[in-house]
Image 1 (cartoon, rainbow, N blue to C red):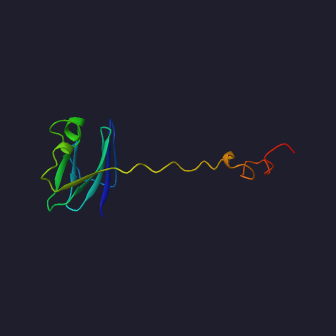
Image 2 (cartoon, rainbow, N blue to C red):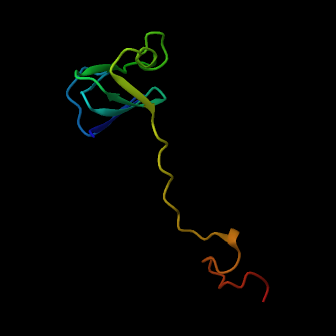
Image 3 (cartoon, rainbow, N blue to C red):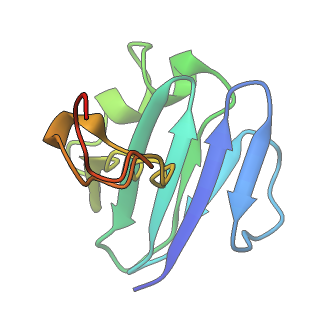
Length: 115
């Protein structure tokens, strides 16, 4: 599966390479799925058809919230749209956890109390 990512909200972050397009448009090739994170709305957009299509993302009205927004008008298109998965949790800090009581790596030798 091909997967590319595009994010917009004042700046554009692209993972992978997208073809050169006018700013504010993304193209989804047949069989391709791209992640579009624009205007506080993140969606995975998959092209299930045989022809490429363009997704307007220059403004929230074009992408997600207007009456003519792409996300409000996908009926009849060869497109499957799903919500982006949540980001992975941050890595563990490696600190000690005192919630489990004695001997939990907090440097107290496991005494857990007054000796």
